[in-house]
Every structure is written in C-alpha cells, then in structure tokens.
Length: 342
Length: 168
Ligand SMILES: Cc1cc2nc3c(=O)[nH]c(=O)nc-3n(C[C@H](O)[C@H](O)[C@H](O)COP(=O)(O)OP(=O)(O)OC[C@H]3O[C@@H](n4cnc5c(N)ncnc54)[C@H](O)[C@@H]3O)c2cc1C
Ligand code: SF4
Ligand code: FES
Ligand code: FES
Image (cartoon, rainbow over all chains, first blue to last red; front, side, top):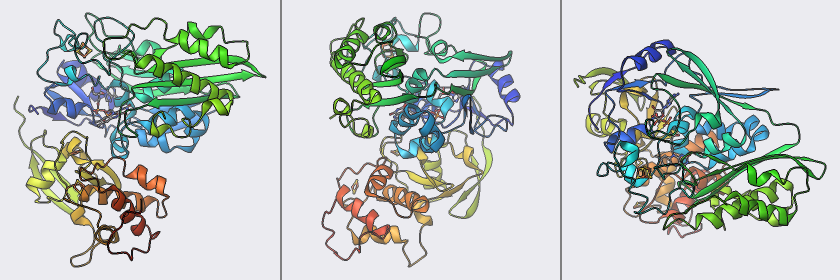
C-alpha cells in the first residue's frame, strides 16, 4: 500500500471541504473495498478521510409510514438483522444477507456497498491498464469474461457487484447526497449510470460529494419482494446473476411489478418493457416464461458468459412464481437463497 | 507523500497500548508485529480467508482490511484474549475435544467466529453455526469437526467422544 495522509474530521462539513480541496482525497468507510484496492495498488489516494466517526453521518435505520431511511454508515449486518426491514422490504434484507461473509457484513457500510468498484480481474490487477482505469482497451471483451456483463453499455463489460444496490433498485430507493455545494437527492436509477468517456465510474457521484442516506419508499399494501442470487458456491461469492423483484397483485391480477437484474451489466439492470404486458393480467406460467425470455432479449453475451442468459431467465421465473405464491414452481430457492441455485 | 507517524492508543484484550503508527498500517500487522500477538494469522491479506478474524466490540471482523488508526475507540479481542493462563476458554477447549483442526492455521479465526456467535446467540442452531462460520475457510477441510466443536461449545454435544468423529 502506498503511503497516504490520514484525516479523521469531526463532521460532514469538514469532510466535504476536504474532499473539495483535493482530487486525491477519498472517503474511507468500512474499508473492505478501498483498502483491498489500495493493497493491490489499483487505488492510491493521497489522503484518506475516515468518515466512520463523523458525528453527523448516520448509522441508523429509521422507519415510518412513508418508508425507511438508512444512514450511509449502516452496515450490511445491520440491514440483514433488522426485523422491521425484513418485514417491510424482504428483498433488501435478503440481498444484504446474501453478500460476502458475516465478518465483512459487520464492516461493510451502505455507502461503501453502493460505491464499491467492479470485481473484474483485469481491473483488480495492477498489470492491466484497462479502459476503466484510464487505458484504451477493455481486456475482458476478448479475454477471460465468464463473469462479465451480457448487456453492452459501452466500453466496460464489468458487472456491478453490489447485491444491495440491485435490491434497492427494485424497491425504487432514492440516494441522498451532500456536496460542498449542497445536497441533492437522486432516484437510484439516476445515481447509477454506466461508465463512459469522461466519467469512468459507475455512478454520478461527484468528487466532492458523499452519500449520506438512502430512502426506500414503503411499497403499496400487499406488495411482496424477493431477492434471488445465483452463486458458484454457497457463501462468500458475488452474484453470477441475481434478481430483485417487487410485485403487487390486485385480486388475481398484476397491479405493479418492478424487476431488476444483477450480474448482467455495469449497473443494476431494470427490466422494464418485457414486463409491461404482464400488468393487468393474471400471472400465468406461460406469461412468466415469456417475460423471462423477453427480459434478456437485448443481451449480447461474450465468448464465455452466455450461460448467464438461461440462469437469469430461471431466476426471473422463480422469483415471479414465488411472489405470486405458486409455490410448486418456486421450488426451493427462495428460502435457500444462501445456497445458490439447485 | 510524507505520511509521518500518528500516535494512537489501541485497546487490545483489555489492555491499552500506546503506539506511533504509519496511517497505512493494518490492524492485523500491528497486532502481529508491534504487539507480538501472532494468534491472528495473515494468509490472504484481502478478506478472502478469515484467518485474521478478531472481535471488535464483540463482532467478528477481518483485521487485514482495517486500518489500525481507525479503531482507537474500539475494544479489540484476539485469540490471546480468550481464557486465562492455564485455563482455556470453553470454545478453545471444545476445539481440542473435537479435534477440530489439522494444520491449525485457520483455527484462531474459527474460534473467534464461534466466540462471537455464542456471545450473542448462546443456543445456536446448526444453521446459525454454519452461517457464523461461513466467513472462515479451512484449507485442510476440518469442517465436520469444527461444526462439532461449535456444538460442544454451545452445550449441544456432550463432547465425550475424544476421537472427534465427524458428526456434521
Ligand atoms: C471477499 C469479499 C467478498 C464480497 N462479496 C460480496 C458480495 O457477495 N456481494 C456484495 O454486494 N458485496 C460483496 N463484497 C463487497 C463489499 O460489500 C464491499 O466491499 C463493501 O460493501 C464496501 O463497503 P465499505 O464500507 O467497506 O466501503 P469502503 O471500502 O470503505 O469504500 C468503498 C468505496 O466507497 C466510497 N465510499 C464509502 N462510503 C461513502 C460515502 N458515504 N459516500 C461516498 N463514497 C463513499 C469509498 O470512497 C470507496 O471508494 C465483498 C467484498 C469482499 C472483500
Ligand atoms: S470489463 Fe471494464 S474493468 Fe474489466 S477490463 Fe474491461 S474496461 Fe476494465
Ligand atoms: S488474512 Fe484477512 S481474510 Fe485472509
Ligand atoms: S486446519 Fe488447516 S486450514 Fe483449517
């Protein structure tokens, strides 16, 4: 790890001023991603700003009739273990519980999980100056790409690694930011934006901004949500593909449906169009199967990752059957989400 | 960059230690190299194995991914902080009874995870034990006996069979 200066400001204002002063200043929360990148010499900030001790950066979860507000310093373990979150937002609790390991969930913060960088091995290796790190080439496109994106959002083909980000997307969360020029609040779909020329990162967070909180609106009464994650081992693995879905039925007809895929693109990937025709109709097996196929329609898999298409379709089918209560089709995955697909 | 040394007091196993540290020093290295507490093991150094697990305010964490400076307010417990001289902690004793190791390199981390679990969940189910241990790899594959050790420590297995037969 390269040497750096260390700062532990007491409040947000001081931190935001420090961030605005220098480009080489980075916030340090749980450290589980940033310190690993620094050890690998992929990140080398001049100044690390410990934000964990900020008096006015929240580590609390608050629920009221409108929804939940989660401070940026809330840990994944806090989310996983909060009974009120599990009750009101099952997909969020399940996503947190499926991430990493107990130790890492005790350390990792909500702010950090949204801002963590991709797990692409070319990105994580000091030896490759790939496009996302400022180079000219994406090594994954013609290299080892079994864990990469099946949707093409530009040069980079890394997938967004955060389970919680995927669940929050299906739950239509809003991200509250504070910068040296003031606050702003973004829909999560605006906060995440595929990396492009001029902004080779996965979010629109500015250098002088911090995430201060995430707000999750309470879904309409009767809504159910779920997070399913396919992994190559039962724990301690990033999603090969994941699905977060939130469904509300009106009698036996679909009233509202949000579905977001993880592990398929540089950002959490909402499936909009393909589901539209399900609304207003009963959730029949054939319609579900068709929607699952439609959800992957625009995919352009690479040499080694086409397996993600049937995997994603199966997870979508399973999620929808499970939410609709047709248990026989949902089989065992829902309660066994830590085990990966059968 | 001139990083300099920063003064910090760390509370480890109930003792305060005054240290002057470079900011980039991770807790694991400080425990091992500055405080001589070599129980927490350095294996992957990247959050991928669990051998460096310590308790921070009672919660298991990977000390390889923590800056020592960040944790001056915290109560840190390492494997050396368990039990008394000549008197092992019941979790440590259970690992011996169940023969829950081969090379022993993962053992301190496994024990700290079980300790963290039992402190908050004194009567865990098998599923809870498995989940609590899901962040600790054992390269030797002693998992069966590690499960049994955790059950013994939780008072769910009499621990009389000294051969440590695999009951998981
Ligand atoms: C072995 C391993 C396995 C993992 N498995 C999974 C998994 O299965 N699923 C999953 O989702 N994740 C997984 N993770 C990733 C883990 O969830 C993230 O590393 C963690 O959430 C990052 O949070 P942190 O608080 O440690 O962030 P840090 O490492 O402190 O920071 C990460 C980034 O976020 C920025 N940041 C932090 N807080 C803020 C803020 N408030 N405002 C603005 N920027 C901020 C930092 O500047 C930095 O750029 C795994 C990690 C490891 C090491
Ligand atoms: S997928 Fe993205 S991170 Fe990986 S090599 Fe290509 S540009 Fe770099
Ligand atoms: S040494 Fe810390 S997890 Fe492997
Ligand atoms: S006993 Fe050898 S790694 Fe677990």
